[in-house]
Image 1 (tube, helix red, strand yellow):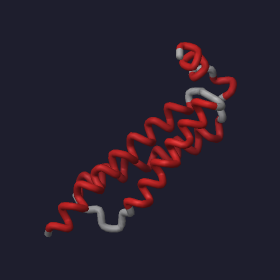
Image 2 (tube, rainbow, N blue to C red):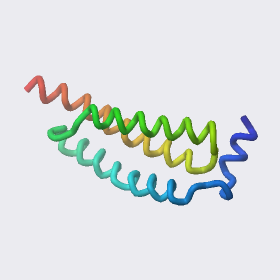
Image 3 (cartoon, rainbow, N blue to C red):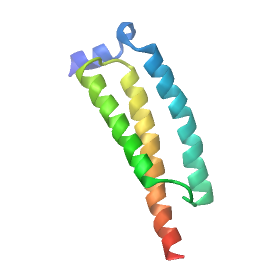
Length: 100
């Protein structure tokens, strides 16, 4: 476990392009979460899409842990938390809209 943590902070094996991709994707999620929370509306949001994104981030995290652990793992964690937050809000407000 300690070795894994040490390896995760070694920058030499980090994929810079993977990090850029995750940063770009991650930059949009806070806006989506904020909009959902502010408007309390999920019109146009697909729960299936969010689930697929969540599964993709989980697969990326598993890959990082098993094959090339580095600091990029934490970008996956941050993105996963943001998308999961949007998904939970989507579930909460979808039920609210169905009641109306």
